[in-house]
Length: 188
Image (tube, rainbow, N blue to C red; front, side, top):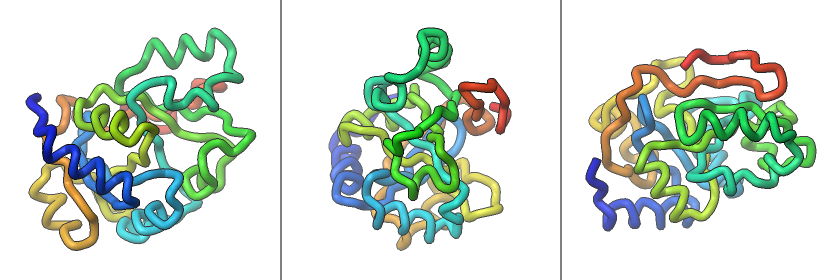
């Protein structure tokens, strides 16, 4: 995939300034924002009509972006994460100190995190210098959108930018698995 760096830099600036953006992921289109900007997260939740209690995924470019969460893990747990990243596996990891903001964690004392292998996501997270929120581009209860055209039709006027690109070859969103129990919450 050839990236339009100038266009991506504009979207990255929008993200850094507190905007809500849409971008392609490994399988579907996503909506994202700076997870530590409560106003941006609140806007994103309102756009999707998603309750804050459900929590949201954080996606990053590297394990280092999640180091505060990963530092307390055992060697075996770290190896489990490393063996699946970068890639389409989201792990639920304990967050007893509240590194991820409560408006991202929802009702949980854990955080859902993923290191993506999608070039657009990797570029945006590298530019932001930290993970970003990653939630399917859809209205609550509806199917995730799989084309930029549908994202524009559904969210134009509600979001602040679109990172153009193609979704990956996957047909379903990332697998979601609990690091401690290995329980699968969503098949990938």
